[in-house]
Length: 128
Image 1 (tube, rainbow, N blue to C red):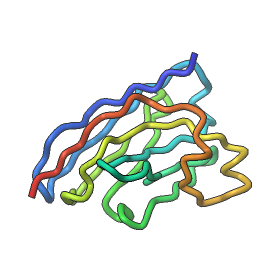
Image 2: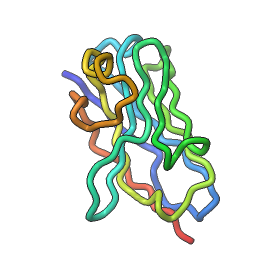
Image 3: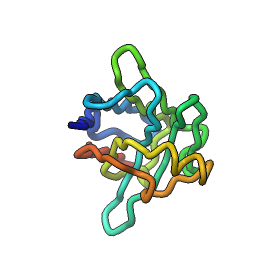
């Protein structure tokens, strides 16, 4: 059974930093395609960072230069380092396992439709 468990969310002031962690199990993490998505109140869920099977990462323009996705292959954990946070980054953040074959035919996509498994989410609130 695939399991994705996020942690590390919380409240932070604008300009601050937060690191989200996603513990994974039930699949081969080493070569898996993974991503981080977020959903703000009354908005659609959006992809913000996706890494493919060979380590290439795509970021949404809204977070490029501020957020960094990384994989700890030894611990089977996915991380999202978030810096220079803004109030508009307030959202529920989700770790996701992405279907590599769909990513290969749509390189650079951040669409939710390529996700096969979701975590339960962790809330990040940024105050001004």
